[in-house]
Length: 107
Image (cartoon, rainbow, N blue to C red; front, side, top):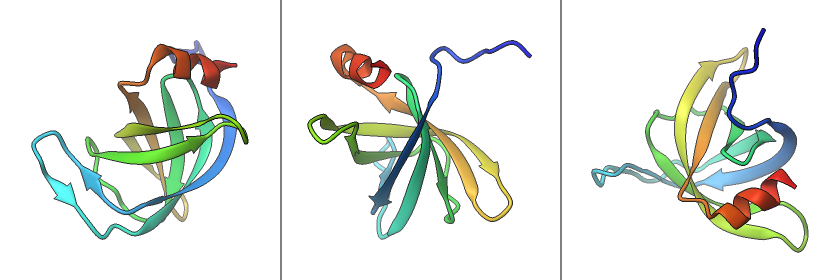
């Protein structure tokens, strides 16, 4: 099967807490209070698992740690969702990520 991804994914293991989700038209979902577990990353986005059914096309903020010395705040948009055996798996894309930060992810 031919690879269709625009950026190769690499394994990434991290946990984040998501408290709220928001959309461009000012829809806000507060009190989400869920932990998500990232499993891969690329310069364009992040894959993660959650036990909570999160809606597509919503955004959330994360503090992304690449190493002890490299971390930054970013916004992710949920663009894909798949029901797994005991959780949901999601694909997100970075929103407005500066090119120098995308290069740090690639490195």
